[in-house]
Image 1 (tube, rainbow, N blue to C red):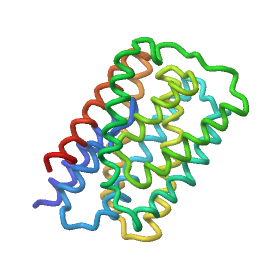
Image 2 (image 1 turned 45 degrees about the vertical axis):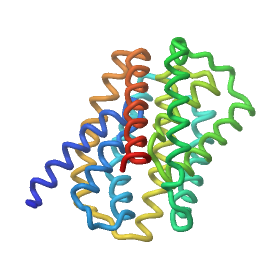
Image 3 (image 1 turned 90 degrees about the horizontal axis):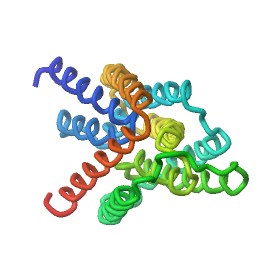
Length: 256
């Protein structure tokens, strides 16, 4: 296969991944399968690490874009990000001892519940109902960060969607505030995963740089659209990504 075409195709996939990921997460649904299709004989850990390298620039850019227009709740996002950093590191290490595939049925069931709950509760995330964040909110954010961070390092699909849903459901945020908070935690999980993979496997640095530039362009477009169209747009995108995740995991679990 022509290497120029491979780079172009992966750059295009990274652009769309950055677009989706900047709004509600789920960019890995596009970017990671594209990498596995292009390099079927390459060690999975190399592709996972390359995917994280390509994603972190776009995720960071989206967080910055949101932060200019939406107040970041640092009192909970900061401790949550630190917990996510630690959780993702240990999640990546856990892959050596457990097969992530065992999580598929459980994650599929959870995503179905999230989709049904979000669809039934039309008011969910429409407006912010955040309390004044004290020790309880910080503890919840740390639990979310540590748990979902571990999950992201270990398995990954739906990380952004789970973060957004939990921030809305447990901390009363609207979709925009939850999305920017999720981006902060995603940057932390990506950093931890990159640090782990870079120290243990060979990464495809040149390809990652090309994909990162495309991911960044997609993230800039996506975050601007989310800010322009508001929480209703983000909610629809959230439900769409969750439904795609359900379809993908259903196929991998029952039909593959």
